[in-house]
Length: 174
Image 1 (cartoon, rainbow, N blue to C red):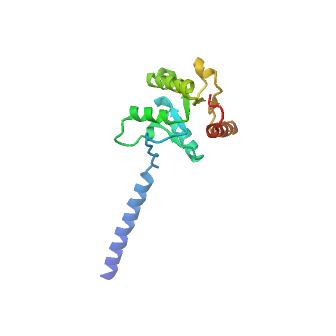
Image 2 (cartoon, helix red, strand yellow):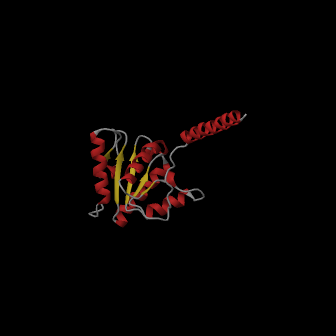
Image 3 (tube, rainbow, N blue to C red):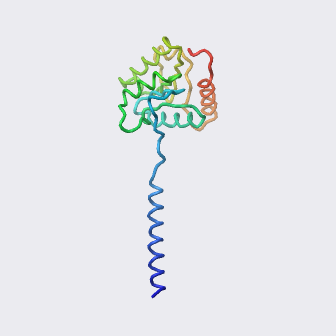
């Protein structure tokens, strides 16, 4: 009888570990939650279609120790548009991810205009980020873009390192 009880307990424990293991595998790593009231070194603007590229870039910049604002990371219960506006005001640099979808998105066109205005009025840096081969609009075209069209390549790694150095610099912000 004792052997039966031990066997039953072992089966229950084994099943519990199996279920717990499956649940652990289903969990995805949590995205960081940002507080739009904080200050940031980088504000990333992107069209929804480029959300994956923007999140990958944001995660890479955070791994380099930079404080990054990405609207996907706004915490629960906060108003997204107000959070984005506050974060834009509190960011030293603005990045805009350019792809085919970018300038077809009215909200991103507004963010583009706001990023350019911050350059003119506040000495902040605006950096176009290419994730697809597109023609940049005129005011973005006059700035040197960062080319991130080939993830995993040596050129991509070099471009990312150059971007990190630029974001950390305290030189001329225009």
